[in-house]
Length: 509
Image 1 (spheres, rainbow, N blue to C red):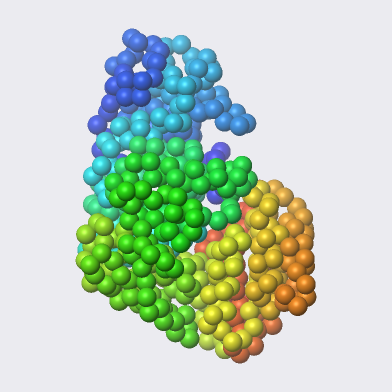
Image 2: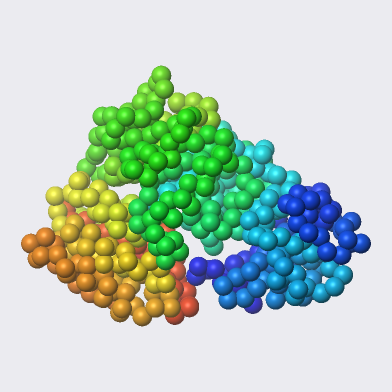
């Protein structure tokens, strides 16, 4: 039975076709692990996985302790499928049969990335890996960097929320950042296929759970920090400290947006700084916005200026573009490639316009945290004199404190807010909507627009379209690029983009 991860089925990740096997004794010494069965120290390892169902002959099986079960409970399954050694802690070692080489380490998750990198030949040392972290803007900045690298003639890889791409071949993403063994195998595959530069989103989960352990980054970049994932982090300080791990020396060059206090705290000697509001190594001027949302601006950096055309609306996308430019310039990418690459970028589900010939604007955006909702709606308001009609929900089994805040931010900026379902997951959808409504309706009527509740997301989108007149803007927020909706453990096919386009066509038949 395939494992389920964050609403998606975890399929077996790609592996490189050529691996130089490594003796289990060498792996043990690499991370100072105790090796049982010393008479089997010569056993050769040719792959690594932490999922028993993905084991291939010759693998090291990582049996990690978990909240509900210990990975060592699945060691017999892994060994039956061809695993030749196990990495685990003392509790896990007791569950593994005699005669099996076991690497025993007090924190096996912490060293898993280093071991996987070693087995797969340390591919990140030969690839230029751009790692982008922050609350918002990771995906957009990744796409911006990748587009410029392509314009500069590089062969690119992309790892992120929307998709993974290897030299143009698309794979669906189950996690924003893959687990460490899958990530190093993926980087090795990219190297085999001629990739030279990899752009990767780095989530706080990845940094906390060691998913990027063993990865050497050519560039580490920080976008911003705002409330999110407080179901995983106890508070914002812990969230920040986790993000800051990307800037602990593992990145050769560090680029930080300093438009917020969190970013300013990351600055140290050698940090390249970016700002659209104050002083920094890279700044922006002469921002101009067209009626359809396209922008132009001039980026100013060390000894040069770059005139930029950008298809993405919103001041926050100027910040994302400026961050991308600073990262690329640090890697020696020329100005003309930067200009060409940025001019053509669009990002799935990020301020994505849906045009079916209607006389109002329609936008799908992934904004699913309070600040992101506010920024997206402010960007829409800045270029529209008509009404803003917003459809928004909140995900279940995630940070509950942000729900009323999202309702409040959306109601304050919308002429009509339709509160609907996002991915309820295991929670009662009505309870999630009620929390959003509390925040929205806490505003005085003079401070907010009309607030409507329609649980069915498809019906909510169609209702929003039915309300729109010439010059209005319909904003469908929260799910962005996603192609499924998870309800009570089942993922149903659902696309905001497709549903919105269909609703517009039906309304204009």
